[in-house]
Image (cartoon, rainbow, N blue to C red; front, side, top):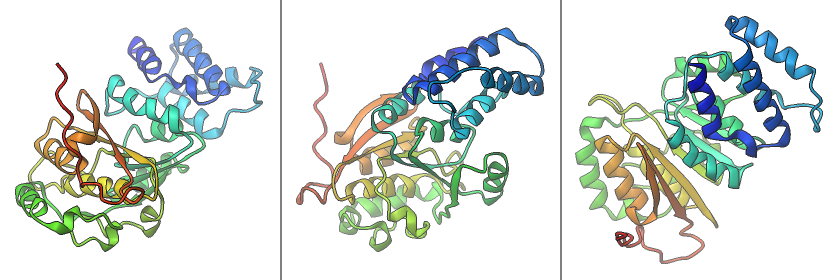
Length: 289
């Protein structure tokens, strides 16, 4: 287990944040490989070791130290693989501090917030009880309740309705959209921020009665198109499933797809306000030979 954690830490390459974080990560690796005591003792040992070191910036931010301690003393790993995480990490390395919106609150939330150190990372979660539980453990995470009125079993009908409706190709604030896929009841401040990155890893979508990610995927693309200038990097996880596969290709567009790693797809959605007349989707990129 220790070897796997070291490999995971190496893979996500936290070196980019700040020099202090690099130093503390190395300290974590040393302590992790040198001590095999209980979880509680590991916390005390790690904190004692960190306090004795001279960091060039004096002090590591509490959010980063909390993250190191959490993953150093937990057997729970993030939902995504190391290779999948590295796709988003590379964009965060270039763009952070940034505005990062994540559909889903989970075991990897503390990691995402830390990789966007100095920026704003917001989580949208469908389960109010889970929000309370995570807030009790990590009060610095910013999260809000999101409600959905869709079900996976209706996804085919929703797709047919959306692709034949002009309303769903209009680029507007989601709150003003007449497309039945647009999420209109999120907290107002979600709509008032231009998000640099959006991760769609929720809501639940693995059974017919689950809400599915149809609206989350569509709304993420609409938010990217509706920004004033620039572009939004959108990531969709679990594209091995039918809904995530079809809806990401239809509404985030094959022509905007940058890459796929495992079950994660990365799209870059440009502003449609900055250049009027853009088609909702560009032509698909020619297949490389």
